[in-house]
Image 1: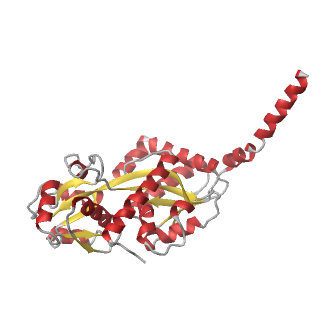
Image 2: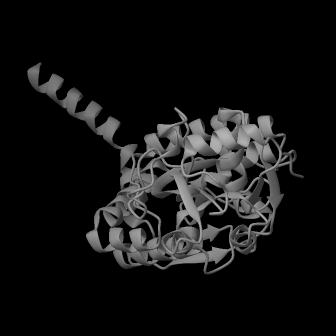
Image 3: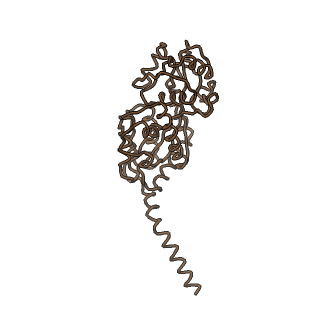
Amino acid sequence: MALHRRKLLQAAATAVAIPALPAVVRAQAYPSRPVRIVVGFAPSGAADILARLIAQRLTDRLGQAFVVENRPGAAMNIATGLVAKAAPDGYTLLNVTTINAWNGSLYRHLDYDFLRDVTPVASMSRAGGVLEVNPSLPVKSVPEFIAYAKANPGKLNMGTGGPGSGPHMYGALFEMMTGVQLVPVHYHGTGPAVPDLLSGRLQVMFDLVTSSIGYIKAGKLRALGVTTADRYEALSDVPPIGQFVPGYEASGWQGLGAPARTPVEILDKLHGEVNAALADPAFKTRLADLGAPAFPTSRDDFRKLIEADTAKWAKVVQFAKIQLD
């Protein structure tokens, strides 16, 4: 009787294990052919460079080519839509950014739902911006700027990289939380806006630290506060805006995503490799030099961040009445 019972238990254990075998084999075999990472920006930008760095790392570690495919246009919607509809087999990945959390609110007509159709694989970096003003403006701190802006409603021109861009969104959040009224002046990217800020045609901008740090260090622009929750290493003497506006935080993150229903064992394998790269001192230094500090998280925490930012920025979009087609 005991022998018969033991055989039954062994048979049951074997039956439970059998369905797991294909998943294990699939993870071990992946990748068996080249993998593409779709980037929604043109080559040579910060997001593209980071995508290429992680692509090379994954190529070296996993023995198959991870190839960056640039699909710029429509504020990442072309690239995101392509990946959202791709086969969920791990061979098409998306370079995901904070813009993905904005677009559901910014655009009326999207042929995909980012939270439903793209699953987070791994976070890679998180960086912030800086509230900067032309030195001619008679303010030297965030409280002084708020007071001056409230005394001069609608008289301060704020440069942006276009409607719904980072500088626009960061500034709109600031307006929503402080009650100041700034006048957004939209450019095709922040590059053309900086000369006008330097000349005084613009008075304020919420620009990326990496784009403005040279002008700040040279005294051509005055930094009042960084948009991140903590001080920025490259501008250690500039306090966070949140120190004066409780709860204010604005930052851009970047990572990898995959089509929904991609096998979890493939997601886990990719996540582990990305986090291993982010733990490597040389890789971390390279990201820091790009102004994109390493930002490793669990897949669940990355998903929660994306969901929280989607809800947070939807309120900003509604407040600022930003609507794109």
